[in-house]
Length: 478
Image (cartoon, rainbow, N blue to C red; front, side, top):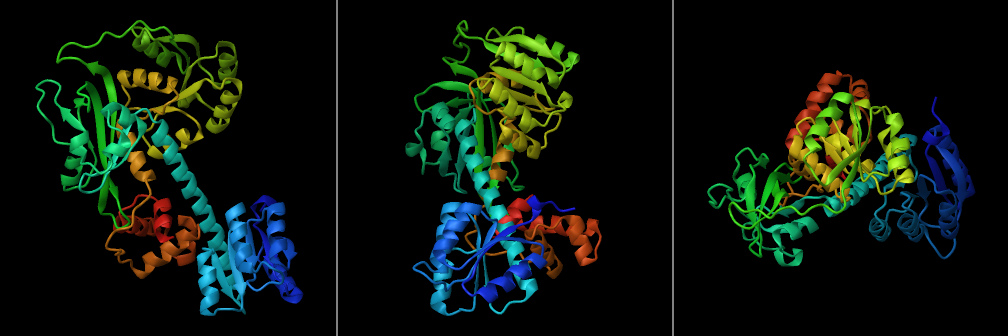
């Protein structure tokens, strides 16, 4: 049974009482809730602030100093509530004013009940998608700022379009100075053994006929001031809305510190403040982790446990810098667990051992507050790097995961040609249903085709657009 929290709450703004009551009855028959009806723009703004509805149905011509267009703009700007215009007016000037407010829909009177429902569902879904995209962009910005690795993006000519703070630090180039320069001028690398200059990984991606990402071996990066450091790097293509490469994202990570010569390295100083680590995993894993970390003078294991029930008592007692948790033994909800850890010990950062390389899992856990994710392909060097990185409140991920995650999160660019892939009639039907939020099973029932056929059509649609998931498809459609 549908709960009240699932029912969309719609504020009706209409100054004709009979029409308003008719709209209210229709909305209720469609399964929506109508918490209030108001007749002026001023009341609409006040009531929207008071009850925070999911959507507003707004008549354009209203009594009072504020008409529907002004009220809609105020409501969306201040409260992020989507508005659908409901009016008998369709002259060019009215439509021009309406368009400037970026409405979520426009229903012309008289209207059909199916038209109303369709417009409301599309508006609610579009607003949901918009919020997700805003959250994604916010998350991307925070990730790029706090990630413990250098990130540089370029266009198809290899010209730098973005650098994060860590990239500035590692290359010794300031962002403002590097933007607009060719990547080869800023990111200079040589082999560790022969010191032979290497082709830039961005160039390799752009020249790769398959348009796939490239993960290179360890190389030496020569910074602007002449310092040398051993790094690990990864690069992957950024694609536009028709699947063509529109740029490259490059990620790189410092491994062994500053190199003075080919053979002489700076000795690591004796650590003054050790990283206090608690391990929550099975006995077998704990034994292996102890052996790996035993030579590391800056990391101290202060407690161990084998159950997620022991996490909160352990951190309350020991106040660790880093908490390493094996997801396989964690029965708790990760976001809830992270919130509890923050409440009890804000200085403790969580490093999660995942038994998958699925980037959706990585994104989900990093979004929930986990500061680092190790996977099945991680090695002992990665474990040590991750602990040190996370202890500094920076994000750590596998190098190949970083570029793959970032290419998924970087907003899809519109192609310069503006051309759209040609879809079949059936594919267009499926795209429209996806935009409305229907699942594969629901789409199969509506179109009287099998779920496997829906999946096949989806694969073709994704291939034509050069995308990999529904979120990117909806982003393109809107």
